[in-house]
Image 1 (cartoon, rainbow, N blue to C red):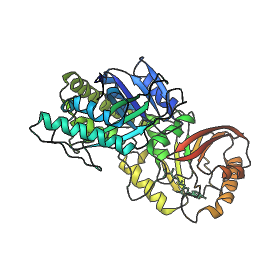
Image 2 (tube, protein in one colour):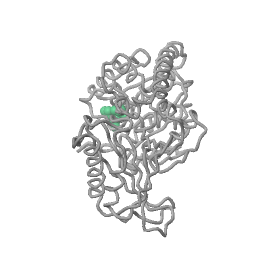
Image 3 (cartoon, helix red, strand yellow):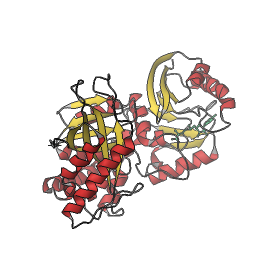
Length: 421
Ligand SMILES: C[S@@+](CC[C@H](N)C(=O)[O-])C[C@H]1O[C@@H](n2cnc3c(N)ncnc32)[C@H](O)[C@@H]1O
């Protein structure tokens, strides 16, 4: 049986994000805490008091999810997970009446040389689940919480990686709690009938990587459902990305907006409850100030798309986000659109890249003609094109000044910069 040394982790978190945006996420975290921050592929580990993690839930434009690290121990065989799990007082994290699920992530050793030796992640999850259930049975007169694979109240992430001592036969298991449930990228303004190919946090990342800070004119001439435009307006006004969630939480429109709001580790911590109440008040004020900022701004925002249904989706999302008054939205062809009222600004756009069946045929021509229009009608601007189809970029006959590798889900993509002079 395992040697039961369980580390109860305090004040450590992991925030995940789209691959390629880790440094942006790290700078958001650095704005809230000076403590230890480690950037890794797909996210950032950080040490901070709980109130900082709560603030990051409200302030991060880039994070997909935030996880609270709870326990750490070393395991030699899968069954050790069962024995360790049976030692943990799970009621300190969630209640018997709440449902739970487990997701497993296995990674290489910190130096990248060794893979996890465990072949079957389902078997790891099974052992952890059995240990959790048996511990609840012991503590709760033979009753146990149920598993719900879709809408669990508590999502436990089991992270397993080879031990830091690479000669050890053991691996380190860390138990993390997903604070979010619904990802932070789901801001709450999207028309769910329109499947947008770009998540909100990735769109915010593209805008920030372009150097846009709200003091320039901004254009997306292939705006689809308007995600890039909406995120640019939130950045322009310094409106917290959580402003719609905040409203729902404060007015109790949603009983359980984020999972942590119903977890016992949060509800039983007076200090965290107080910190959260203060954050809610502060961020509501920031949201209000943000809309005032937009009202006062002198620079402009333009969005257009050739398709009526995309125009309608943008309109819906702009209304849902209360941002429709701050943008000029038109149905226009990006290969000949011109904006006479401005002579400089930043263009960030995500042209089609063949993600829909039958779409690829005309794309080389579209990319070429769009590039020609940039040359003709957008002198003095900087353009950023985001695409998941790398060869298409070659059809644009403009000199690239920078390329950045990003991932849109699993799709390797590029953000390509052009200086138009
Ligand atoms: C990948 S989608 C953009 C998705 C968008 N970022 C969003 O958040 O929904 C590409 C968009 O380009 C538009 N498009 C294609 N050809 C165009 C053209 N010639 N002029 C303007 N828009 C065009 C499509 O209608 C589509 O909405």
